Image (cartoon, rainbow, N blue to C red; front, side, top):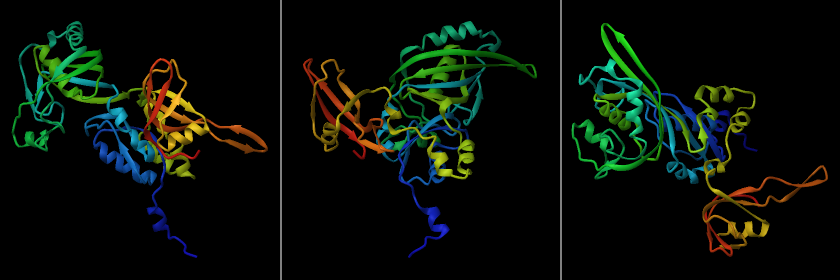
Length: 340
């Protein structure tokens, strides 16, 4: 008999699937956060979606196992941020990590909350935004931020974005050593690809001055909220319990938590088996909405204390539903491993 040593046991990876809503703090990158949590869970396969800069905090969904197949679904989801913009200064990076330059274009004390609200209202809806040089977008295979660090400014075409909502939370004026300052706190719900740093700069410009982000916190991605997320400190506490993996696994959401905006189709045992083999299925769903859907298989009957019951339907993956008003055709899209 071979007995594993403690060192060998610690290196064993765990094949688990699920979604962790992680509340990232400032000071480290999204990938660094992923690696820390991966070691804590001893997870075999991980991934993340919706990158946050080291300066930013907030919601960062981390995927384990089968959930990594659906990471791209959150990329298209709208995102909500809380941010603070300091006026009267520009930053070459658009945030507090860059080199600051004072811009004296107007008296900051003259900027009222009502004016800020009027300006922000003009940014709601479809807007054009030029991506910042300090971004991960690539030109000839090279990230723009590398050009920026070399002092090279490149032309970037404006992109069409959608600002769903932009609320002014607070406008604050202060005076220090006889010098006035003004910060505005905003909450923005926006489409994918929106650079909140650039949005802050553009709002400051519309106010007749300059500005940069001092804080940025993501509070939601689609239906996922930061209020349900766990900080690293909270996870470490769970990892120090008597049964650490039970405690850590208990805070994971199921794989389909990433797909709450999709419709739902449930299949009986026979259709579920055929669907898992990649077969297209004719369904009698006259009023079904066509498009991508979540697909669930009928859970098999079980016997507990001589009582047969059926558990919750098992998530099988996503499918594409095609309808013609008389019926529907379901074809597999992205499947996960399940036991039927």
